[in-house]
Length: 120
Length: 108
Image (cartoon, rainbow over the protein chains, first blue to last red):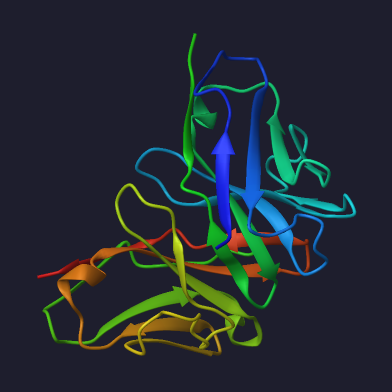
C-alpha cells in the first residue's frame, strides 16, 4: 500500500523559509512513471498547486510562486521536498504532497496534509 | 493563465442527480480531473481524463467534457457525497496545473 507523509515545522516566522518533506512508502520516487507534487490550501479556501518534480530533478512550478519555490527529490531517501522562501501570513495553509500520475490522470494519491502557520 | 470557473455551491436532495460544472475556454479539448474533499481530509480523485473512474470510485460518479464546460455528475446522491469538489487540468501553454475554485455540494 502506497503512502505519502508530510513532515516539517508547523510554525514558521515571517520572512523565513518554509521547508517540508514528503516521505513515500510502498513506491519509489525514482520511478519513471510519476511526478511528485505539492499542493496547498489556505484555511477555508481552495486548492493551489505549488510545484512538481520528476526523479531526474526536472521541475515545474506555479508561475505565481516560482520566484520563491524550490521542489527537489532525493531518491536515496525516497522522499521529495518543498522550500518556500520569504514567507508571509498569506502562506499559512495546509500543505499536501501527492503523486502525479500524468497530465491525463491527475494526482492519484495524496498525503494527509500538514498545517503550516506563518506567524511571529 | 487558464481560468477554471465553478459554481460556489450546489444543493440536491438524496437520491437525485447532482451536476457540478467547470467552465473554461475550449475546455472540451483538455483532459479534466475531478477531486472530492471532505472536511479535514485530503482530496480524493474521483474522475480523471474527463470521464474515467479510478479503482474503488462508485459508478454513480461520472464526467463529461464538451466545448466550454466540463461536468461532474453524481447519480443517486447520498448523504456521504456531501463535500467540496474541484476540477483540474494541465495548462500545457504554460506548463502548470490549474484548479477550479471548488464547489460545495450540500445534500438536503
